[in-house]
Length: 208
Ligand SMILES: [Zn+2]
Image (cartoon, rainbow, N blue to C red; front, side, top):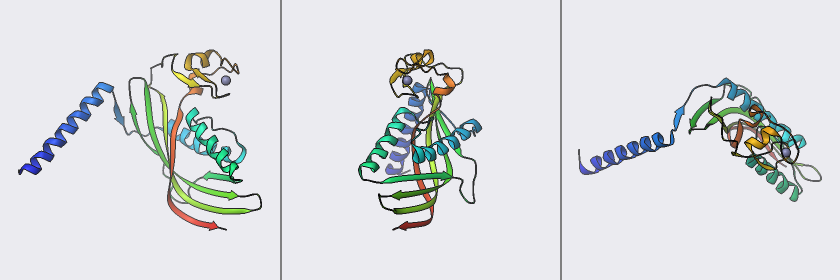
């Protein structure tokens, strides 16, 4: 083994040992199992995104940060005089179940769930449609929920899913201070902390 190879090999060993050490300390573990409940929630979130773009109903599964992102995006479009609609449906041909990968700390599990969707985006200005594109895409959503058998602290910061007020898990279970809505743990989790869309195959596109 020459010096360069030995150095790389040693470095990799140090990195692997370091990663294992950090993961042990954090209690992080990775899990690639198929989770049907999570898959259903992934499809629900995709559907909720379509509804959000059609009638402004915020996606229930979106975390407060994700909702803010969507609202800011819509405000930006409106300030430009644009009406953007995004329809999320089934892909035309291959429709395999979403795949997921999870990692957890001592309280929460974060699952990265990815699945195929056919997405049509249309953009209108005040007069007419100016853009229309349909593409098979992959949506990847990071969904967070408590570990099985673990109850997060009542002090866990959380925004009210109904009125958006900053609150805590405990307060939302006994009734939001502002809108008085009570929530069950099942209604507060999972939440989509982040999502991304990657175009895989573009069917047609009109820039009018
Ligand atoms: Zn509220």
